Length: 473
Image 1 (tube, helix red, strand yellow):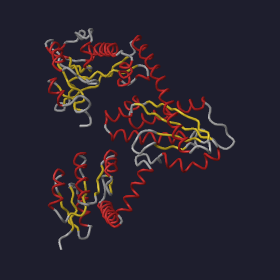
Image 2: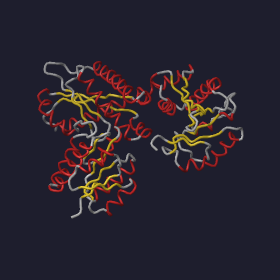
Image 3: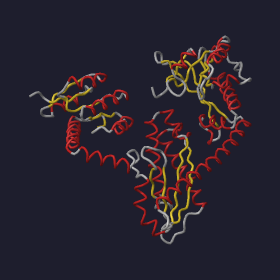
Image 4: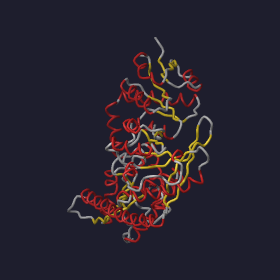
């Protein structure tokens, strides 16, 4: 009888040693790209040990293994890989570097899990599906239906409940810019920071949950302690302010300043008074809608304040520029600098936030002019001979009557970086505008190629001198 095969794309010594410690198993090493095809060619394959960190390879290999009922063990180099393993629901994973003994234990566990699933497949699937409905795998938080049942007796006993709704602004933008793995990490940090904050203040009895699994809406239930009055508006406002500051600090520490600068949180709340004539679930769901609308009202007030801040920023010229070096990998020499504008006001520090507010207030041209002015002022002192200045420009800026010659900097030293916050709708007309600048000596780059509107069609139409790949690629 032929031996069972441990199919893998990993070639390190620990995997080879692990295979020798598995009685009746032999190692079958294949290139990552060939794994799915090899599964059919190797009928003796009994488990897949996946070492690749290529997202497309992982997805294809796991899906192929699922179709052939092969358990999957995944080697994870970092937290991003670990989240991918959880996302794909592999039977087992381990953190690199790992010993042969740990790999053996993981492989045996994966085989046992697969055997157990085969034996009681229907029951296990139902249990997993139920668990996923009741708890968010990423944050570990219970879902809304679970918490309603858990707190039903306490709500009836107290006779009232305060529902808080947390609206995290720009979390979807984070996913667009950095990818879902980054947002998952941000959500883990956020959930942990919220728990820390609640444990340290008067709202420690608050219960935290998610509306739906794998989403970014958080809800709090707060039942005042026996004999204590319900929270006042002032206390709730202080809660929201303190919570925002605490989460912001945690995001700066774990995710960096750029992520923290995009972060905003708006808290809405609603007071629920128990009425035995009305179904409790209905009362709570109505309160959640009310709290969500209240959070949006807070957001609208904040937007109005930020528009006022932006107008003051434009009046004062409150923008500074960070010059990020661009290095030639073959020589390690700095070939140029990218000018990245930042707002002096903390609420408008992030360029994404500044331009988002400017678009709402119809002040994009004014903000773009100020950012270009600041970038060019500093470039005259920053650039050495033959170095380039990469200047971010939105397609709409080309329609600005004030957008012509870019100051006293030699056009041959300037690369206009097309940052497509908005789609280019008329490419023939836009190419005419680019030609006018090319004739003066300016060059062009496409920014974040592979994301948003900066796709292959955009590259073909713009014929850039430089292509900057999006981080997701």
